[in-house]
Amino acid sequence: DGGFRRQPSGARGGAGAEQGGAGLEGFDFSDFGGLGDIFSSIFGRSGRREGAPAEAMETVVEIPFRVAALGGKVPVRLPMNETCRTCSGSGAAVGATVETCPECHGRGSVTFGQGGFAVSRPCPKCRGRGKAASAPCGACGGVGETRAEREVLITVPPATESGAKVLLRGQGQSPRPGEAPGDIVVTFQVQADRFFRREGLDVVCEVPINLAQAALGTRLRVRTLEGKKVVLKVPAGTQPGRKFRIKGMGLSKGGRTGDQLVQIQVQVPEKLAPEQEELLKKFAESAGMVF
Ligand SMILES: [Zn+2]
Ligand SMILES: [Zn+2]
Image (cartoon, rainbow, N blue to C red; front, side, top):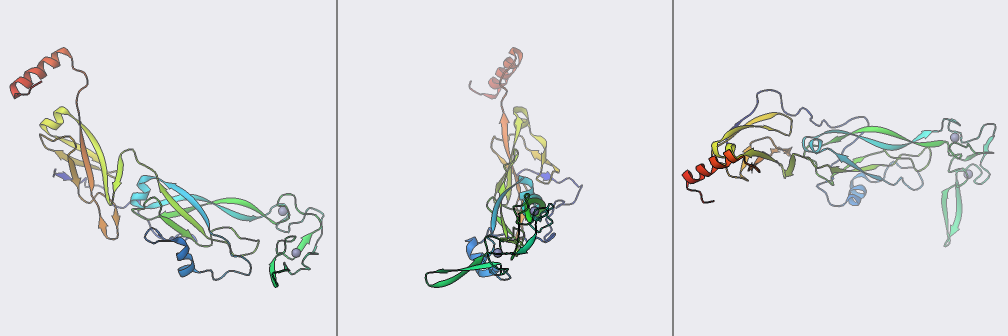
């Protein structure tokens, strides 16, 4: 197809996705079937204390087209438990006394019979702490913790598609104070771009040119995904809808790199001045065009 050359400036992969980060583990589940199977078979539920494990929280994060295509990092707000500042975590109101929980006698769990079995569950009064205040803290309701949010940066692998998931282990909330925090599953939702769209690892864009450019040929400066300008030579007689391929300017994944496809739109003038109309008619007659 059409000739092109790359601008010599700059190295590729400026927004490259380096793995890792503060306490984060990113896993791409997009190639797997069910998430439930992954949890049970690979990660298991080890390391949890007694009582029900924390459920994995799920959240959907919108990411810009360019970040999804090239990889990068996006900020995500995650819920977290924070020690209550009012009671410093004791759960007691000012002036209240903290004593052994009368409900569970300090054990933190209560046992009750169910269908002939003795079932144990966290004490509802002290929420498993074993201690209870004579009057609960008004700010946290006696739990000793309040809900807060924190922002973390999540690594987005290159060529990420909508629906791809990452698992953030231990980044969720604790089921009860002092217990191991749960996981968070982040599902990526890729935003549409005004200029680019994806076709596999190729990236497609449409570029309008005028009638004279199409008939006589032209040189276009086309923006790539990485924000560089590439000169695209459009030959004389280019038809509307023709696609030009710019090699290696698509997405990269698994050692393969796609191309950028530039689809040409030809714009026809909507209004002609009388003089222009006469010229075009003369041109048409000389070219043998019927109109
Ligand atoms: Zn409190
Ligand atoms: Zn209790």
